[in-house]
Length: 208
Image 1 (cartoon, rainbow, N blue to C red):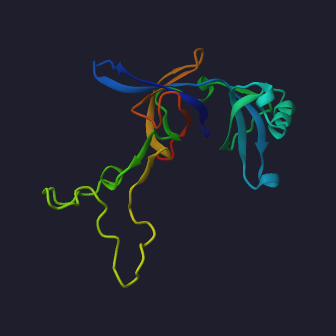
Image 2: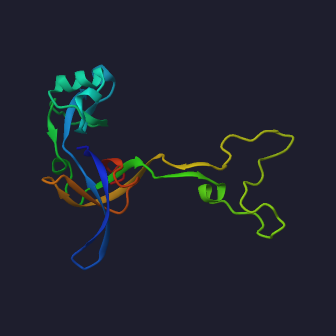
Image 3: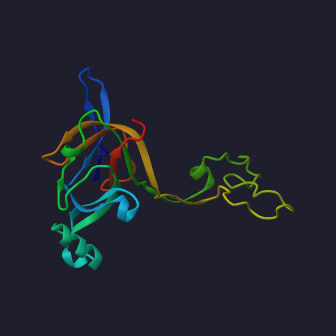
């Protein structure tokens, strides 16, 4: 069974195991999800389920999404995500975090990493700086741009200064240390991408 939830990163904390060892943990707030659409191989070419989570005002929903909410007979949802799964769900079905995960499960967490703004090549790519003498005039610059006459251009993929962070990334194979379905809380061992309040998706680990 493929397991999945949509959540919001609440922050990090510490837990202690039975031996008194400290466990770094991330708390994820998970609101109930509702099934909006079942995708099939015959119609869509693959099998998946589309779910929605989080409340939103009806006037902020576009017409295609509003029609889908009406067909599934659920209130408008702020976040819509699609997950590939072999399970069959009914339209409008409510899915809680306790229906999906149990303590000891291994998961992959995807989200948008923290934005760092414009960064140089040393911070962004971990490159070595130039000579640190006062007369070098080349302390933290990029360095060689490539050969001169051939090919006489900067090759694609050259690591240069630019916008750092704010990209989709995934942390794999984290373990579930606590699940509270009544309060909608999922606690994972370790850190997950993104800032506090950032949207994340949690799925069954591909490496488990």
